[in-house]
Length: 449
Image (cartoon, rainbow, N blue to C red; front, side):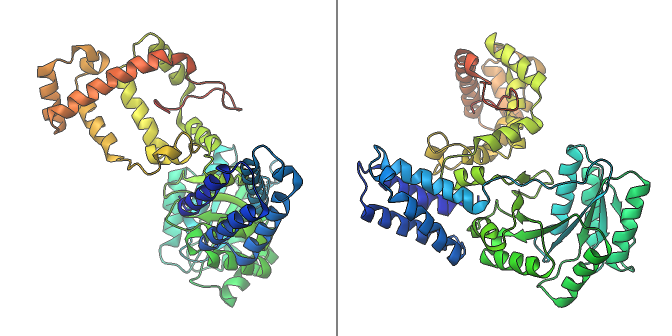
């Protein structure tokens, strides 16, 4: 994730604080100096860092902290709270007009930020919330922009309104809204043109659309990998046309992540969503408190729950729990759980969302995601009878399975042994599975998590 380096540095600072029974003002000053350097290296805006450190310092050297039995923990709590404040305190939802009134959303941003893909991702989100979105292709300049929107719209099951590339974007926007009114669409998302850099023509085009169409929300898409430039772009767009919120893309990449910590403070506009991958489903609602937890190494269990709930079938979960209690868990169930982990982004992604004590201890462990594919190949090489009743897998069967999967027989032996151990363990802990955790009802995480 974008914040891996920053997270590691901050955790080292906090580790030193926790190790002290009492804190002096000098201890706090030294720690905050290191926090300041870590934030600047993560490309957080200099003024934002300065104000952030000042706020933390004012609270951290207070009597309540200094006389606390756990002053180190109190300082970490303050850093966490101030980081949440920095990113906006509360989650901001995209608002819609009431009833069947049409909500018009204008998407804007520079070329290469992932605007067109993000526009389709957003349409999918709205559709899943019961809205009837219509995508409007207003980028008449970039080759294949219209086709790209149509392909992604088709994948999301959302129609695309287009008039080709020979009409003015403002006229396409007007016609799209008329089409939406006639065909009962209640959200129109305008995919406008991007440029390689901000220029007058681009801004005038967006201003013209806003002056002639009742744009309910103007959303800016920025590439988080451009760091401080992303913040500058957001500030310029806000000053020129006025934006209502920001979507940060490529936050899963090897980026320093400073944009996420700076945009709200610099522009006063909220981050609405973050792009966490290339798939059309990889768009996450932005929760300042969850993001602060991730950055500070406290994990993000709530987002992990959300990811699990999207794909996981509750009926299947109940069936699986019954099978585990009766020790009837077989290789078919094992395979299904592995596929569930892949849907959620793989073991590596799941571990990143675990709190330091759970996933953090494994952060330096190299996770071989390809190993899952090897295990799948072994299971697919089994007969239906072998998958349903692993006890019948004898040496000759193992030899055939290994040959079919293209692996050494030792790999088959290892898998069968691990499976038996897991089966015993899951029966032993079956009462603990599922828990009472999620606010939004029961859920089951895949095996082992």
